[in-house]
Image (tube, rainbow, N blue to C red; front, side, top):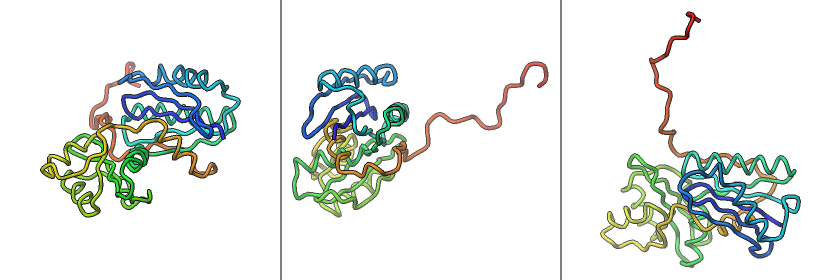
Amino acid sequence: MILLAIDTSANLCAASIQDTTERGRAVHDLGKGHAEHLMAVIDEALAQAGVAFADLDAVAVSVGPGSFTGIRVGVSAARGLALALGIPAIGVTTLEALGFEARQANPGRAILAALDGGRGEIHAALYSAAGDELAAPAAFDAKAALALASEHDAVVTGSSADILQALADGTLDVAGRAATADIAAYAALAATKPVNGPRPSPLYLRSADAKVQEGFAVSRKGGS
């Protein structure tokens, strides 16, 4: 199966073409502007792999948690490509990809993937040494997230690792501090998922910062 994996959940705009091995990749640290650059990044990965859109059998995408805008860009692109090409789209969470990556370097250990959710929240999920989900993605405060890691003697990875490490007085084992995993982790996980599953949808663990202001309206011209 030739699979395209894309990730726009954090600063990176990444694409990878996977078969039995990785055949091509393009990874750019953009910060912003994923919508304007994603298709060019995908084209770069396809060209490196020597394949065309018509050769793809599936598309995988990071569904969050992460940047609200970035997640929407990636999920919309994956679903659009899947519809246009008549292939399945497969969602992979940022947390499970981080957990997968950390597990490769820390065999036999549980993994707590923990991301900075803003507003004092940590968005985290706990995975067993075998990769099973022990605690589903949810919003925690720092003390609750640390308690979960301590209870399972878990290695911590993700952008909240330093916060938890400081709270634990440096006693935690930390696998990484990135806000997203390498694109190869998303491809590897997608290859293990059923292709007839539900369409990818953004995973948001809190509401967006931008909200409609209640009790305020601008009157229309002409009294309409």
